[in-house]
Image (cartoon, rainbow, N blue to C red):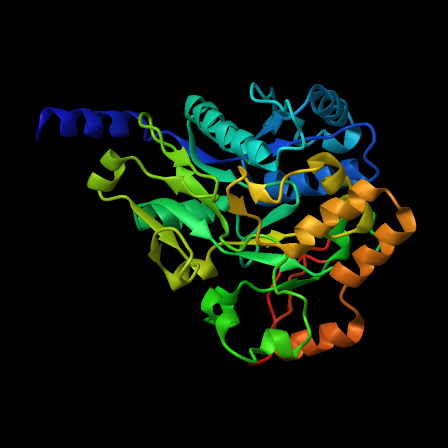
Length: 371
């Protein structure tokens, strides 16, 4: 055994008592926001800490106001069962110009890498990067520890898992986690890739949908926390394993066809997926774009933003015309019952039931007709 390999082996042996998983996320709240963010956070923490059994959430506060809001939230009686698992961090990379979307994404990346150090110090075994409009979905009422056992069994060092996009059926919502039931499934769940859209007369266009997803489709990822080495989190939601982990046989896997990061493993779909509640609920949508401000049409002034509804939402919210904004939101994002029935029939809307446990003890099971 070479000297370097011996050091790696001994260090890994000393780190075998690490366990569990943590989440790293970046959050911003300002006094002018109108959505019921306390209700959303309560559901989000309950789901991940109590139901899925994450050990910690490393929550990087993107402004002083965000830190104050979350400190107050932690004192609520509703947070009593999990407040010790919430680690608030006044982000060292907090915003200087909130109109720069690219800079916000860059802050997220830096916060993820800082969160990795937090997880390492706490001997956490796995770190997941998600946002507060997303839920990690695991099958059969399983906990995150069941997923970790599977990842360990296959010596996986990074997993990139698909996201599904929430379908709002109404304009107003108090809490999008409680209101949204149906999701546009990632095309990989249907055995399709992004090239499907380039086919003439594809079914999406035939259904008259403005677009399929209104936000990203490259999923989110989780990384194994190691005692040394620095896996880098990229702007594309991927972790890149350091070379020494790759030489030790750790794999990067994905359940996303074509645009995923790592080796394609379809069986990973049965282990973990992500529910993305982007632009679900008028007030939450308006809050999002009020925070993003007048961002440029291109990331870092170089790469064009590919989502037309993203740019139009920016302009509509900046215009601050309430009636026009509600009309735009309803016509752009809300799916009416007849259209939803058509989408369900063709497999482009699947049901994930994440109702409160007092109402439904069954974890979500997607249902869809054949394409």
